[in-house]
Every structure is written in C-alpha cells, then in structure tokens.
Image (cartoon, rainbow, N blue to C red; front, side, top):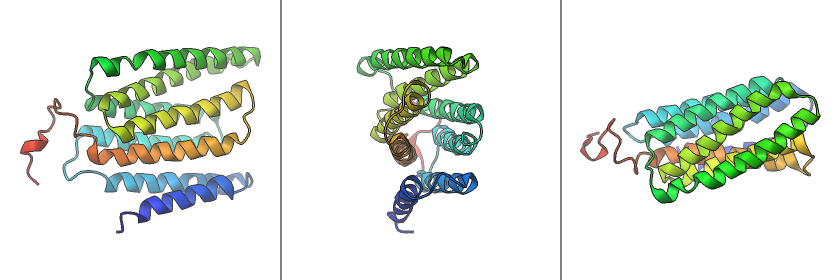
Length: 226
C-alpha cells in the first residue's frame, strides 16, 4: 500500500466530517465522525515496528477507547468522558513504558500543573454555577488523566507523541471551555481539527516510540533479530 494513501484518506474523511456532514441525522454524523478514527487505527498498525513492545499495544488500546468515546459522547457525555478517560490511561501507561526522566523534562510539570489548576478551577466554578455538581469528580479525574498523559508523552522524547498529546489537550480544552464556560466561535472546527491531528500524530509515533527507551528491559532492540 502507498504510504501516503492512508494519511490522505484520514485527511479527506476528516475534512468531510468537519465541514460537510450536517448535525442531523445524528446516526449519520456519528458514523462519519468515526471513519477517520478507524482509519487512524489501521494507520497505527502500519506504523508498528517489526518487533513490538508493550508500549505499542497500550497506545493502540488507547486509540480503541478513544473511538468508543467518540461514539458514546454523542449520546451520553458521561459515558464518552469515561471512555476517553480510559483511553488516556492507556496512553499514559504506554508512554511511561518508554519514558526517560531528566531535569529539563521534569520542569514541564510546572506549566502542566498550572494549566490543570487554571482550567480545572474555571470549569468547576462554571459547573457549580450551573448546578452540575455531579460532573465535578469525573471532570477533575479527566483533567488529571490528560495532564499526566501529556507529561508522560513529554518524557518519551518522541516529537510526534509530544505534539500529539499537546494537541489533544488543546482540543479538550476548547471542548470543555465551549461546553461549560462560554461559547467559542467555530469551536467544532477547532475541536475536531486538533483532535484528529492529535490522534494521527500519536498513531504515527509508534514507529519510533521505542528508540529513546534504552532502559526498557522488555526488549533489547540492538540485539533483536527479525
């Protein structure tokens, strides 16, 4: 298969969903929303190296739960949030498998914590004002999970994983702000564009996800034979 075919199909189907598919009927909208993610999962499998490690499998599981989140969130915000939360925990676990901690990357904890605190405080205030107290704990858990996921991606030193996780945070931030705090013009376009690009980058990171994992005892790449 041409190596550009799947990325092209992902891009085209994403554009069709974002700019062409109407809000109703809901069933059609959900189907077209899932098509780019299904293609991204296929793409993830094509990006696996000849010898895969646990980190690869965990990231792919994260992609599967995110596609469940895409389907569920259209009919139940809580169910969708739960599926995405599990997806982030898989991403987090996968990235931690190949993370390398150093002082410079540890410094990234501060801006991520600051971001989480500011976003969390604003969203919780809005939830309280609107009488949606039941969503506070799930939202806090989700913010914590996605923040840790971004931090773990930074520790991998994998550029695609890092930018993918950051775009995921941006996408969810726009979604949360638009849903709970105040309306954002063209929010749907911004949310889905950053979301699909984030997932594509995370999937494409699989080829080189192990390269900086010299301390990983699961497999010694330099001694492996194919």
